[in-house]
Length: 249
Length: 310
Ligand SMILES: Cc1cc2nc3c(=O)[nH]c(=O)nc-3n(C[C@H](O)[C@H](O)[C@H](O)COP(=O)(O)OP(=O)(O)OC[C@H]3O[C@@H](n4cnc5c(N)ncnc54)[C@H](O)[C@@H]3O)c2cc1C
Image (cartoon, each protein chain N blue to C red):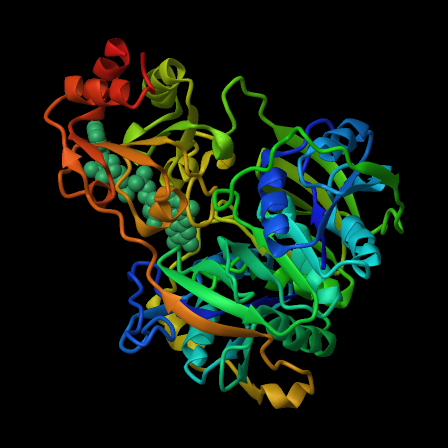
């Protein structure tokens, strides 16, 4: 089995985003950037499938600015075999990303593409499903468990009411949820080794797909601020408050 | 202008998130049609026809649609899409799973999780765990939209008298097979529509402590139970209890956070609650920055005392 794992460079999840004063977006200058946490889970799952002998090759791909190379190196240090960097001037929208990934998937012919269910910057939750649509493949989104079952992939999904298991025919798309695994930290020797692993560099134009944006961002603003309230001295005061609100009799 | 709303349901009841999507659809203007795709789902189609503001219900009843498998649902929706300018679904696990598949097939850039529809035709949507609200306008002629369940009022479940028309689609794609579901039955109100929520965090230390400390308080208040990611990851409670950026978005009248620190990912899911109450032994916990009432205390003492005094 060959696995493709798209990874996105995003603001680190520990950083509180600051909005630019001209409301054009979030200020990312001098902000710590990392691999999108859901994509780390995707890389981890692929590497585990390789370690278990189920997969032979894991290819990581990132689309974005030149610096996304660092994100690919992280994936390579975790155990992926090689990387593909697609350099674009601006970050394409999910549909544009899915179109580029569809082309790469056609070239690479993986049996499985594992993606994060959402990127923690844009929070769109679209690319995996869009890629599945463009390729006409099965999709197992929000996965908390992945097992091979003959020629099928059994995926347990986190849904609103609990869990659901689907059997996907392959090739297939899987998107990760938080409980799928706990990603490893790359060891120093593996970080050193990753520096020698190949990264193939391309540009969006190489794929001949239309990735022009459909959405215009008119402004980006802060949500209304919640003011901190009062610290109550004891449980009795809290009981009184709940009664005042009519929540307790 | 006309809008197709994709209903979220379990083949017997129309989910309340659908009522929210209907309100958003009405705000877009024009006629609202609801698609109920399911198996043995007549009751849902009938319920959808009674929703105020719904002009028409399309009912696709087929084994292929019984479990909401996206590979089967998306082609059905694509086939109907020609007649509508907007295709709208609630941002539930169904909507999140199915709609991007529809959008990509129609070559449309979906607008996810909208919280407002503005007069100039633009939409507001939260990004960066709700820390940045993006106002976006699309150049796509047709729109595919998912709607945040806490952002609009629910449409009236009664008062409408829409016609129900049977429709059919390509049926089973043969790509994906439903195997099983583990859906917990609970007497409690549903998390996303509850008016009171009691949520527990890592500080609960075990599932037993959730039963011993959180449940009795929730019982007293008729509340739903929620949790932080840490509590779910540790296996104290099931995944569907998770509140946050990547879990459920809630906005009850009262949200009580117990032993939860208040990471931005958790706040993203509950900071639109009307009143927030926090119990935490660390007075510097970030949760106190959004709480209307904070109690600095050890939960193992404060929660039993609170429960007994209610
Ligand atoms: C990609 C990603 C997505 C995420 N999505 C979500 C999400 O959707 N929802 C979510 O909740 N988190 C999410 N997180 C995790 C989030 O960052 C935090 O790690 C998590 O919310 C912490 O949970 P907690 O508050 O229960 O635990 P902690 O942060 O460990 O807080 C425990 C709190 O309990 C208090 N405490 C301890 N003992 C007691 C006691 N005896 N009495 C009273 N108080 C006590 C402590 O003072 C502390 O404040 C996500 C993280 C990532 C990376």
